[in-house]
Image 1: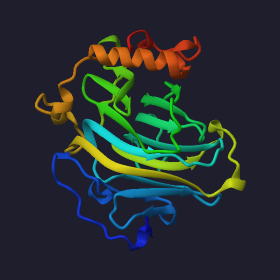
Image 2: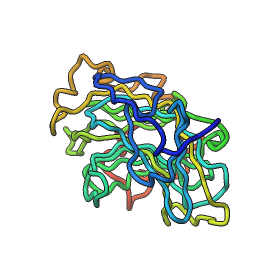
Image 3: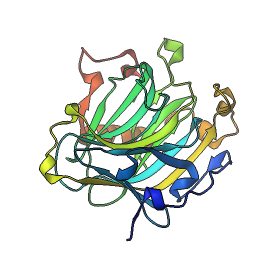
Length: 273
């Protein structure tokens, strides 16, 4: 498939609809950083992020959202190394600034070894990691990673299978994401993810299916986005199948859980299952 650099790719107008489904990258997304390390195919249906010692790259949604379903298909770099962090996440943090305490909902790979880390920043610095050794090689084929965020719960899915839930427990004094957020995806390197073997550079991650069904935030408040009429807001609890899926995934593939350690365990742990 022929690819052209971002600078020579035609940018399409963004969608103004409340609910948006798009296979074209430019409908809902735009580049954020590392512009000369982003490749887009002529149809704008696939994006490649390239990482070498000079830079990685990232893109973000054009809009800010309050609740919705956010989905992308990703294939991480094939070359085996630690240190790389291919990812897909929601964040309330402003662009290119120290985020400080903020809200964030993450899928982050720890190198290219097949371990994906989920995390939630709950108006703090995070440290709610649950990591899974995936039952497939995420570098060989595209797989779908999805975040469903509504006023009642946050649900992580991989290829349509529920793997983690974070419930709204405001009634118990646990904060819950209630600020507008945008979507980001990037490829970068971090010491906490291991050591990068730079002799294998460059590294390339691939993204397709830039799909989201979400409410665009109007101003700072997302209260209107919590309306019952939105499909994604109708789910108030896990279904029987979802509870079974989460239990099975954790039993078979969970390799780290902040709830399992007294020093990192938080009040919500006994409720998020």
